[in-house]
Image 1: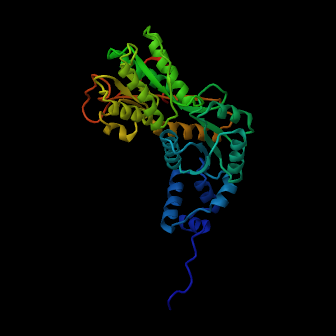
Image 2: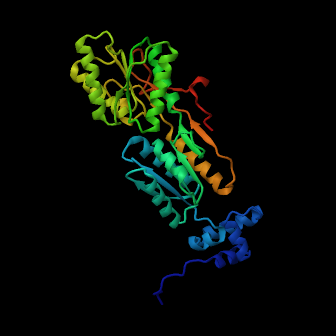
Image 3: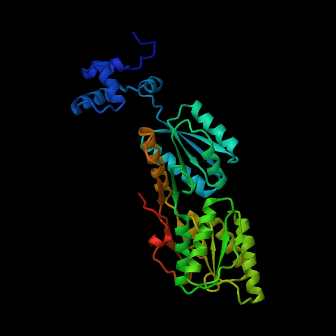
Length: 365
């Protein structure tokens, strides 16, 4: 007679029977308890695979007091950097067999951050990574109660909060030093929004390289990360060429590749040649950067390392809440392409790993 009902899903008791062990031993294997012999663990895992057993997540949470879920609080994820960091965190969490519960915010106020942490708490996360690209957001987070372990990403290291950040100052200094090494002495900078910690670091790196070379530091041009703001800055550069100003730049370093794209477009419109008349460099290494005319010199941020370091730091805090506060700086790479004079690398781009102790870069651990 044909079966009319659905087959009962296997239980932990079924696994115990097939493996020839107790219900408690199966539970210990599922919670990765260290006091289980290797051969016993293999029998249990084999029985789980044979039966197609799937642990009840609610019951497992009651036993282990872990949901194996990590929260992420993010904002500005339409931008390349934040979106790439979010993707890196999600990949790293999956590799550790954790789910990610993400809360996207339109603004990083203390109230919004507090509500986001409350929501993650109701979801039962084991801990959270909070992306804090603005200085006021880091300060707001420090004032809030922390109901579970929290790690910041791209929040700088000025506050007593554990965090991971790319060495923005070191990356900006590296690309500026590259331009100096090619003989450029008038290097203009298109800065990102002033409230962004990344923009601040890149501005400081550009300024530090010029000062170390004994060169005057010109006023920077204001941008907002968008190609449109880069285009406006590029028009300012083109005007300097039309006036024949002695102070016109020989190179432009834009604080991200989107603004560099706008600079390049404005200069093409004005008939200013790149790199013959002015070199142009960016930051981020957008996939499209290698296909601009000419291909764009830039600084590549290692978002995979940011995700791995951020999730790893958080898991250590979850396991050992008394772990001392740690700060990790991830080193970027200088990618040299044809938009800067003298750059003729093979293929789409050559990379140079950063670099000197003077950059302030920490270990890429």
